[in-house]
Length: 423
Ligand SMILES: Cc1ncc(COP(=O)(O)O)c(C=O)c1O
Image: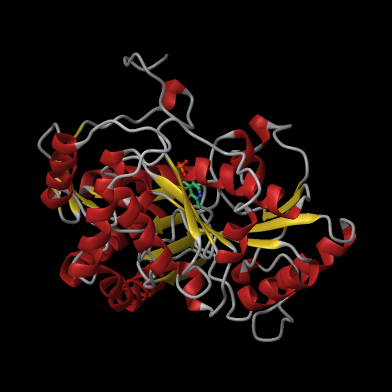
């Protein structure tokens, strides 16, 4: 049976859709039409970093609508200029004289990053990982390694997938204390196997998010950077999910003292208050297009309402020091999840960086269904991925410690009811 609604729900058979009528919210909570108030431990789709009901962002959109509501790709206005300046400043060294290409979301950001990388290098091939999600459009879904890719194949020629930095279940059969970081060195080896100087770019989420919060070992990013430099390949940090403080730093890659060549963003950029994404490119990449045509474009490029929303969101992050809050609460989230894991009868792993964490549990489909029902009862919203055996936590960055602790403890009760507790 299909749903009663005259539109599609995404990533599901329509008979299996679980609609909910969102009415509003405040801070770390959202409300639904039945009068319920949910604790949002997933920031809706990992996007509401600033929190719910942020009137100052809404007011900024209204002010912009009164001033200028229409645009054209080549039009210039203050919000567009200031937003690009802020993004380049946030990207840090190497990006001071870079440039920003605006998009409407994350997939489009990766789509255009592919095109830019191919245009700059003159090469075709791309490397990404199996446990990754880069978006649903043809190029982005081709980069994607997870279950969402096969239905679109053959999507884009030249994408090579490699194994992940999945330390709890190392695909190279290693233990983290003794391994030689094969997950990273394998990327260099794959480049050589694919043919010398054939790889245009390597696309990586700094911490793969929806695929299980696979926090890499400290050497991972520096090793991949070195492999890219050796081959002349570009390194693209897909910060669509991890950007804007999610991991406790402005950008996720900033944990490892490396500089990517391109950065793709969306989600937290305007915190879901408007649809906007971007590709942020370093000076080196920007310079290429001084005299070469940038063969990329969009009608709604840098729409004024979206730029105003993003600009105000970035100011809010600064004013409320929300990235610091994510860094401060990260260890609290980990500690609480470790306590949940200790209560469970089943084998489990906890991983996390900042306010992005996963609990991986070995349990069957029925147990996961029960967990969903228990969480619904407790009015806790988070991302459950029974296919991967993970519950993923990514609350708004404005969540308080009290809300976080009580939320994770309530999650623990639900998990014990679903998976069974220790005797
Ligand atoms: C890492 C990453 N990249 C890209 C995307 C795609 O973004 P969008 O849904 O805005 O197209 C997502 C969405 O979840 C994501 O998590």
